[in-house]
Image 1 (spheres, helix red, strand yellow):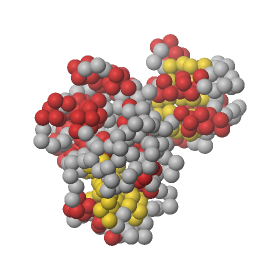
Image 2: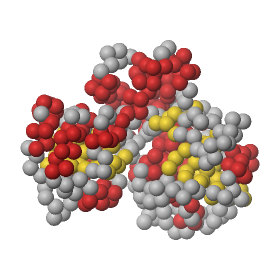
Image 3: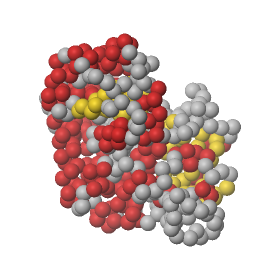
Image 4: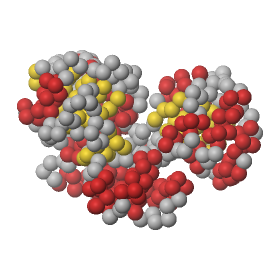
Length: 429
């Protein structure tokens, strides 16, 4: 994300880096600011500092007007009153890169922000670390590569079960990954959730009964990758729908859950309109489900919903810097033909992605992709089944089986081809 942030600061008055708490926003913005050679020094203030927070809340206009030059304001969602003051300051003096803001809540969902900074703001989304970053693998965009890239450009190793389970239980939060043991990682996730519930939830929603929100999050963890049905969810949670939808929107605002909308090109077709719901970090998902590396390895197979959530998580991270500006959907008909994910470019061309938690793939695993290809032949590019196996295999007609290890594969010499046996990865470029 660093190059996108650097470019935005060159021509946009207000740049906002949005993302979950502890995803690395502060580290990113400070590193980019330090790398801006020849630019005026950028002041850094965080609203996690009590004195700064009180000053910003008590007199937003005076606080903003007292800043001498370019400034980074961290955790800006804690003082929503700043947004109108920033708008007024930008309208008086429209300088590129004047305000660099970070938010641990989706600022577009905060009251009044979209209107107050319309035309003055660029928004960048930062998710926790991707598998490629964790593997120190090249930062080329794997979503773009899945969409229409050349298979020969990537050396895909076998998807080893132990490596996959490690990625599932660690997730992408930098501090969680850095913990030296499963016990310490559990402690970090416990503390993380407690901090969000005790501070962010209280500040954003003024909710007194905090037990209902974490209980809803645990319930959603059991449904990650399923269709979102508020009526059924309300019955299971014991909450009226008005309260449920309010709590759900709050979890969305905090990047703890995400929705993937249903794709349809022709509104007249009989497609299921309900979105799918996910927890976007598999480490947090497994923590809420009480799963560990040992318990996952002891099972004969891996949970399909957890593996699908891993793919969702990786797609979100790569779509955030997609050169092709891809969007993400799911596909499902009323006769239960489905494709887990659909990537679409601005021209309306699509690639379908199915996720299988098994190490083998056969023809029936391409049922949904074949249906999508036959239904939309003019715009269908390719169909991919991501699975836990060893080989990149063509199934004909633009259909491929690709190991899930493509998310952390290195980029090197061209591969020997789908039917060959590539040499071990020894070089990264």
